[in-house]
Length: 120
Picture 1 (cartoon, one colour):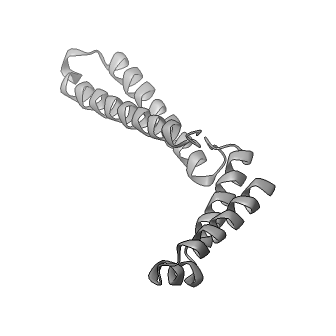
Picture 2: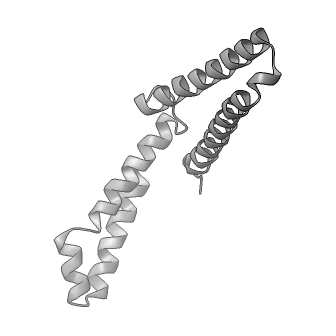
């Protein structure tokens, strides 16, 4: 079964965290080595680092606002369908069947849900 973007999302998160750590370390190193650099070199490097941080921030805003996603529309629809089917098993009727140990009724209910899923 496809990862539905979870693997990709995890990798993206890891990459963003690593990039953020690297840029923050770069700023710290820059401050520690400030005396060893000429003023222009220091300012240029700091400016580039801050621009990169700004780009990461813009990417995070897009992701958080929904303008950028790792799950396409069809996968999103499929996830919604799976969630609806999952909810079908959380109904009081199904819980009651489990509590009363009614395997036949549970199998019938499962078959109905599978049939509904195959129609979608």
